[in-house]
Image 1 (cartoon, rainbow, N blue to C red):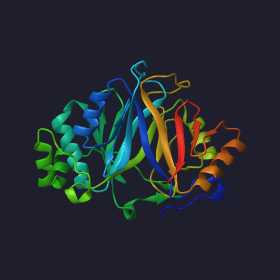
Image 2 (image 1 turned 45 degrees about the vertical axis):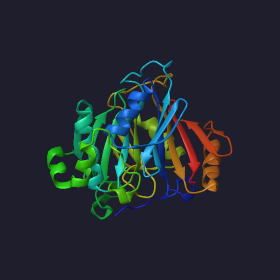
Image 3 (image 1 turned 120 degrees about the vertical axis):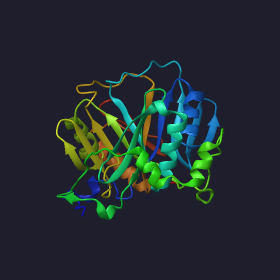
Length: 307
């Protein structure tokens, strides 16, 4: 059972906090669109100028912004570790897994049973990490003193497909140019950005920003290596690790992560967060609709109210 910390409510993000779309700065807009559309099975929601928006059932998950002037990012710099797409059920996850296996098999890097979820990992054509996962029922999550048990054991992808891939999904995947369903009635459940995992220089500074200032609660930690944080008792909405990036300085402009979007229920809650950050001396920008703040490694965080 999740036990809320003793911190004052006004210092915490609201329990209904969720993650919005992740923006990626890309060098090959067409190639990256094909990967997320044809392999990951997201629908193109909007394509205008140098941007393509992709999602599932009208929910925006990724924005690809073309900027070929930028150099490739270093795998050891601060930035994106992975964008984690959470599917509503195991059948929808199995469909995406099978589609990537058919259309982009070289991008698969592994799997993990994390106790709270079942996950499969990929690297997109420009080196951005991708996690495709489904949660186990919250009633099965194990909490001790406000910390959730998240292990990592191997998850057999072939067995997962055998158990969860539906005949209708097989038909979609077998089509040369698949038409991705745009509504649940067409056979595939929805998906959202479940969490965003970052590479940072150190977890102490990450905790000071994401927990103490921004208002997430820490849900588990590997001291000196990784920190997992959430709002409202989710296993994690964000995570930060130093596995490839220990000691990394602030980012310089490069391809990769553009923005991380956090969604709060109301404009009043966005205003309250702005005031809290300002009171802590954290530099913010607010245009009346979106609060923008850079973390200590220049990862851009945008906070907005739900539509």
